[in-house]
Image (cartoon, rainbow, N blue to C red):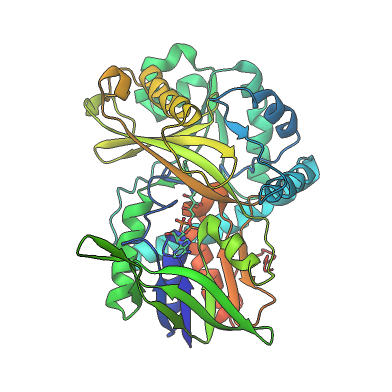
Length: 441
Ligand SMILES: Cc1cc2nc3c(=O)[nH]c(=O)nc-3n(C[C@H](O)[C@H](O)[C@H](O)COP(=O)(O)OP(=O)(O)OC[C@H]3O[C@@H](n4cnc5c(N)ncnc54)[C@H](O)[C@@H]3O)c2cc1C
């Protein structure tokens, strides 16, 4: 079949690869000049099958209320004007609240672990067959705690994961320092941790861009610099996709590119956070809302002090991964629309917190100075395509020929390979090998 994939993030590119594997003719449409230039660009790098708990849990509402006045809060709800498109934030928030109970939490965890395990196998197969190198480290993920009360609950969380087949173990402080000796400098603050050896880390951008090149070599067409302007539906079926070709400059004047109408047998929307407004325009309503996050990438100055194991800092709710001679730290979520600025006071506070925390945990290991301190930090922000459950939508929509693969929230890198494989199997009339109810729309 001739298939159009909309969006070249980790999800769109992995979808394209798995469609090619099944003999389809694939065209990928992407507004950026390359793959993985938006949310898949500089995430926390964790392949985190075991640390997949959704933000929606029984304690989240109270914490979110408490955090509303802190610029550095892990979860920050920034109310929008409900009279405009802002009402979508409130609708999303209500669904999020409906998932803040133990029953929903466990149900969501079960599905996220199932997709994570399926996706991990798909990723390993993909790496084995393509040989892509992306600073992969198969050293597990460790989660360290600085607060005894929080550490006391770690056993329950680990037991829940083990119930669904993930080997997360509680580890005493000494054992944690044996697993990651680079944490020694911060040892006085640590009370204990958990560890899952089967988790991994690696650079999502490098992986996605390399996979896109291999898709191209296998015959996929990539229309980079092409913006999707709308979907045309007639008689309940997708008819075409309106796409604006790249903008050009001539004689110092900007010329909008040509408007194209692309047709295919099937169309898959994988536009990350922008999937929701695109599909809403043809009556498919999905609760996918942008969850802004931040990262900082530092050059490692003292490799002997640098960690090898990817970690989660419980107090700050941030993740830290080694990517070759660089250290990536990322985290926090801000629910407040499609804003991508890095120079607001909130954005600056959140980025500075990342720098400060790295200096506390790994003092002197990299140059963490902010611009104000004379440094040149490499800060970045991206919009996680967040659903209230953290479970993505993978499947058919009610518009014939229109499919969706979006809403991967905090776990799109972890779930990327499997989500691409699953939708390619579904579209090809195959049954994915996983115990997971599909969430089409
Ligand atoms: C701070 C942070 C840390 C994270 N850490 C991790 C982690 O450690 N592990 C993990 O598993 N996940 C992590 N994530 C989540 C993960 O990065 C995302 O879930 C994932 O990148 C989403 O991929 P995607 O392909 O759906 O979206 P994107 O990467 O955003 O891709 C969508 C593509 O669609 C294109 N597009 C959108 N609209 C249009 C249009 N109109 N026309 C043309 N093209 C369009 C965009 O340009 C983009 O390239 C993190 C996210 C953030 C923000």
